[in-house]
Length: 123
Image (tube, rainbow, N blue to C red; front, side, top):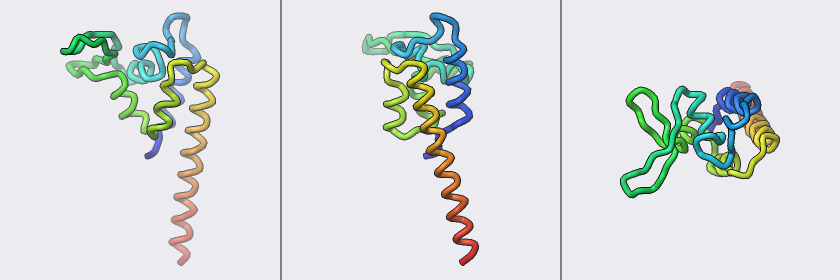
């Protein structure tokens, strides 16, 4: 799975530049997932589902999706990376470290692909 490094860094920049009250890692509408949905043009809010449970949703045009689903689908992270990045106790500094580590993973994977292609071409 290839992470969307550009989007990860845009969201991280958005969080680092957030005014007080705009970012809250313990709230789905304002955490990294919520910020991802907002960066993609969704308005985030809370609503009750058909069972009476409250959930964070993103609305864009006529589309209504869960904030978690938007972030999971668009960021291209592994399951472990999603759980680590969306942890409600993360500080901004911890988020930057996680984003940097994911970015490094993608760089290594992409350079490995190029290296593998060169080996195949020389055979």
